[in-house]
Image (tube, rainbow, N blue to C red):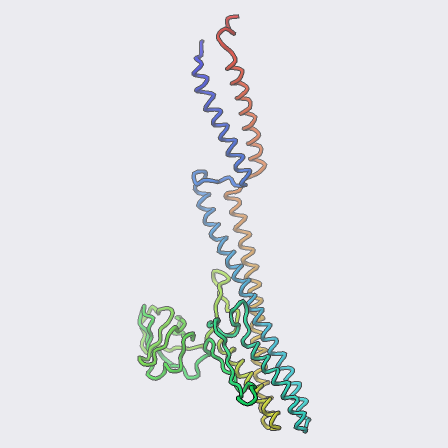
Length: 373
């Protein structure tokens, strides 16, 4: 039976084209390491891969957040440790001064304490990457200001002006309106509140962003979902900037408004001790030493709390690393190739392609005359 030459073209050319496409696909997979390069290759795998990639990016961000939080926590810890060292040195000087009757010797001790006061102010206004460490949420402004003697230029008082501490006489109740950020407080009670404080009403809590003493209202960052009149409320100080390190955990790697305000008290106790020594006032020295012991206890408490946060951050970063690795493995199972299998397929395809070309060459070189010999 005579087979027309067009049948040869119609059969061979599509075969060569399919083999060529298969080779290109295999080489592309080997180059990229992925079996899915287009959504049409495997729609389900592509969709799952995109979901996994989103989760991987989120875990990577949590890891980076944890690293930044750890750096902030370490820097804050270091400054608190320096303040503790200052407190320890002052305790040594005051102990030595307790057995000293000479006014000249007391003034010598007071001179060293004055230098330590300046160091304490510098540490209290310490910065990390341009942000003030002890300012609470208000990291852009120096949290401590000092008043200096017009005669000596020495520090006479320190004041904390950063994120607010817990109010001394907060309102006991508030009136909330569902889905409204404006909350009413009892008449006259708004004066002791400030932006940055936190208010908790039952299970709801939010941060104060504005205080209106004229209308006796506060504006919150979030709106409550229920309307309550005379609801019991708890007010607390600025917690500092929060950093999310996992889907369920937000950490505050710095100090709170209460802890920061206590640093001003610590500096003022140093000032009182210096002035007592300068004046030779033993009663003032004893009172200042007692107050400094309390301040040092507060410093140690802050250091201990930050140590706990450091541990939490290390654990959170480890969790993020492990989760990322698990997601990356699953991602690979969805879209990565089996190099051995793809290499084998490529070799088979190349062999078939070469065989097809050789067959085509032999057939194309024949004519009708070859069969008439």
